[in-house]
Length: 517
Image (spheres, one colour):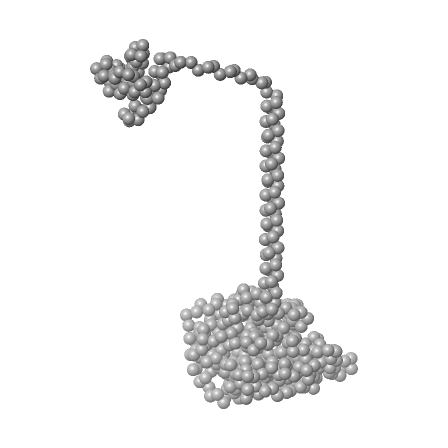
């Protein structure tokens, strides 16, 4: 599929944000605010150009870059670095690079690759920690002859540095070909660690740009195979091929989202690029949080004006949720790869000091959090929770005991106070109860009335206030009189005509007294 058509499709409908003006640059980085190999990458991705012609152009770019470094001079195979000279101007050979053949990885066993082992001249005693250097170069232009930091790191970190060739998409390195080649290189380190005195349990992956992209993808591949590197240091990684984020609108050479889209499509295929079909071994940010669990520590650096800024930040967020040790540094006023290639500025010095610190941390400290580490943390957290629960129960018991003691003391004080008051109160002599005598007629009538008026009130559905019986209608009065007569067990019956003239309770009492005479 032609590059130009897809470039337009990738940018279609987007409110693009140009960061080309130098004003976007940090003041110390202005002279580095230039395009890199942008045009060459466009050409290499253009499928309308014959493959043979693109391969020829790719190799020409590599040779041109290598010749530029050789002229400095820089020759890693002979230990020559133009920056390392003695007082007489002679080159100081502080490290040497050797090329080896590595068998293919389990997923592509027939595909061998070249590995390059660089060792310091003055090797320390004991096994050497290893930097697995993943070369960058926009998928196409990587070459072992153009990375002088490989030799310098071997000396500065007193370590071995191993790099592996990987095929570009134009050389059969379409996904997962390049990852398989890098897997073979890592496997070579493990298999040959004893022979070259390498510490296979202390390997740190490093990459810049495409190299960072592959280094992070390798972290997922290695986890699947049970390898446990010490960490990954990734500068300006390209972690995603899906243009979801605000930073994908940024246009800044040498790499913006439209150009990256074409590069990625060349690598994984146009039918896969920008979809959710591929996993994190293709692009790290395709990983879920669960897939990030148990990864080695990750150190991320990205520029403010890098099109992959937001995806890198999202990937870091997934790592934090998965409890993976992670460092994220977004560099202000920097674009893609600006700081890596910037030299002789205070900001570049800070960047390189930060980069060196990250690598040293991986070598010096084992910060990996694997299944055993999490099991130990779960055990510690369970113990802490149990201790906290026991302490809370003890505190509650102590509080309850104090409250009970306080209540008992208050009860005792109240009892003592009552006893004291009783002792001080004057004694009252009780009067003997008067002997019961015969009940008078008046008392009998009053008792009868008191016992009967409520029954009358309930029967007539009226208020129980006895005062309402006075001046009531005759039926109520008559009925009251009949109840009272029943309570007094009168021998003679009360006839209606005897009660017809009664109108009040008082008249009832008077009539009954007369009857009981």
